[in-house]
Length: 134
Ligand SMILES: [Zn+2]
Image (cartoon, rainbow, N blue to C red; front, side, top):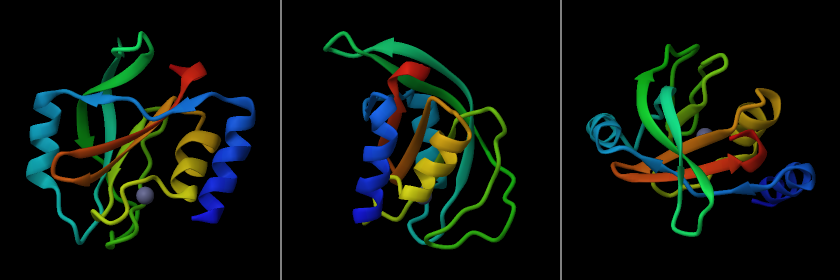
């Protein structure tokens, strides 16, 4: 936990981050039907758009995902995949709803992507968004 907090603080030093975002009903249904708590799954976000939340803030909305080709065997706490320039979504078991430090480092810092999404239940999504990249 400490490492995650430290990394977020470092990243936040130059970037405004927040956790608002949404998933369209069709994408939710697809993801809910495939969710398993015991093995992580990775998805490439092939289509998304910007929307405005109730406070007037821009946020991402995920329209469409495709299951990613996995680079190695998935486990309960690990999934390895590459979506190139597309943002990613991957699942976690319900007890870990937040992105890990390496999730943020890989998906946001290194890839330069605008956001990552963690699915930690059939219909539970957590966003990690870099404001300036939306
Ligand atoms: Zn993760």
